[in-house]
Image (cartoon, rainbow, N blue to C red; front, side, top):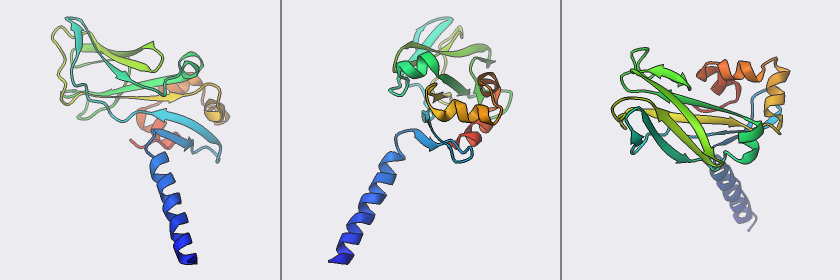
Length: 171
């Protein structure tokens, strides 16, 4: 009986770890053991672009981009473009100029992010990937980063790989 109860506890603990790991959050920022919340999306490939010549976009539901994050946090966005001559599978911070166009993002409403391009012809959907990382302004996340002498401006200018490493975000 005791073995059966231990097995149930192990199953419950394992389930909690699996399900909390799938939410796109990281509870540990990797900075001196300080606990912080960082939200990040998986890499997103657009299924279709809306708009017209010079003004293309696609929208993504982003429930983690709450009013608090949009108004007082920091949102970083990145793109990896097919045919980028800079480097194959390069990850560029947005805004960026690559493959003959400007690429950017905007938040048209809470919980939505739009990725944009000013290409003349409609951008391709395959091979173009987008991602965002969001830091709430009212948590220890940015405070813990500033304890390491990293300002918001420096965070915005950090290379993608460094941001992922600093906040323990899977690339």
